[in-house]
Length: 121
Image (cartoon, rainbow, N blue to C red; front, side, top):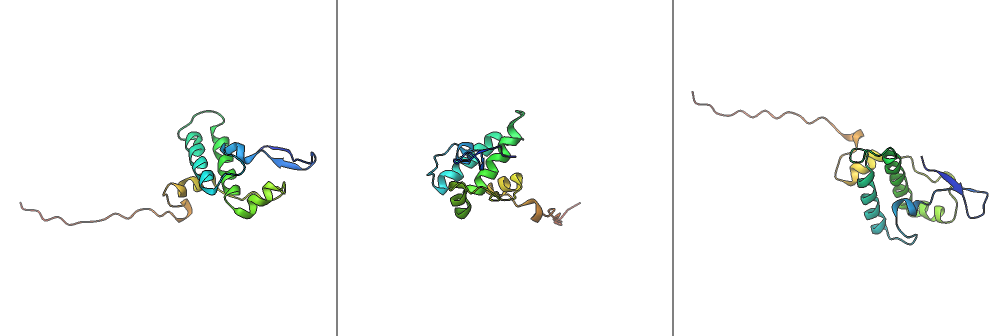
């Protein structure tokens, strides 16, 4: 889960800087955010990185991407209105769909194809 800090007013809880998690400036474009997310997620994906913190960093990067890609949520985050703005996402599902995969919920087992081949004995 994302680590909480304090907001600019000192009292309101604020999420760790999501832009920092993706290593982008706060005025980053949607394209820059997407490129940064893909880069960070690929580096810290648990199947590629065995560091103890890789899974958490991957999941945090995915949550950051999911929040910042939504224009309204991003505006609320930028205004320090962080209460209840985090989307509920499966980080692995999100990563899969970005790389051409089918979401797990919609995945079906491939059917076997039977082809009759002519044989001469």
